[in-house]
Length: 253
Image 1 (cartoon, rainbow, N blue to C red):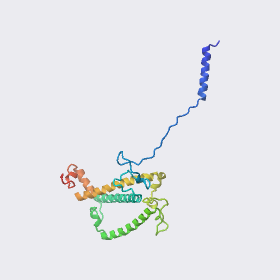
Image 2 (cartoon, rainbow, N blue to C red):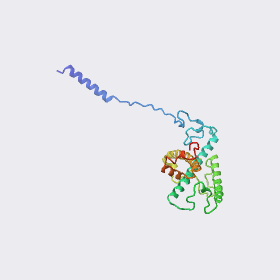
Image 3 (cartoon, rainbow, N blue to C red):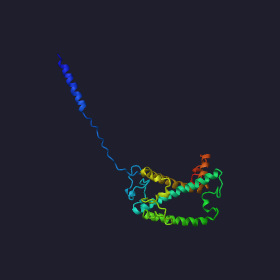
Image 4 (tube, rainbow, N blue to C red):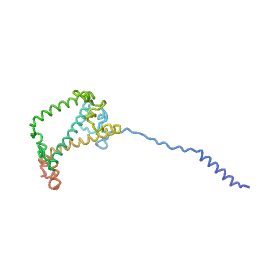
């Protein structure tokens, strides 16, 4: 005769097995709250002004506008393009200062080798410097007029006026023409994500180059040397050749 304990145990086991087979585990849903990305601020704890995004997100916008120059939408567009252009000029200028001085120190020789970057503007090569100035003035006038027209109406100068078979891609933005100006296709990689990264890197390096060029100029005014020459002197004897031993701070020397 089967005892009551064994019967009860078998019933409990059967019920537990049935529940185990029919029970469905429902995973918990996670509540994800997406927040709109805020414009980073150059000053911790201070919110970036919203008017700086009036024309769309600006590369390298950290809310720095102490004089409130960007409050007018049209002026903001002009200032953004002006900063981008000067950043590119500054990067080319710093490269044009550092490379010739470095090549001269390495022993390379060419007409104008060893000429300081300040005197290079008036140095006579195969023609007088005034001739090059007039040529540059004409070419820059042509380029700047077309750049201004494109800034007023994007895409209006995409078609080459002389060589009709050349045309910039449609949908490009002012300051970023693409096409022949992007031979490696960097702006179209990763579905355009790399383009945004390159915009940020360009404006950051451009701002650094503008500050660097200002430093090169002040350095030459005090020392009469190029940046590499000043750096070499400082590394040779940093405790003697530094800003405290120059005329930059006259009341300390």
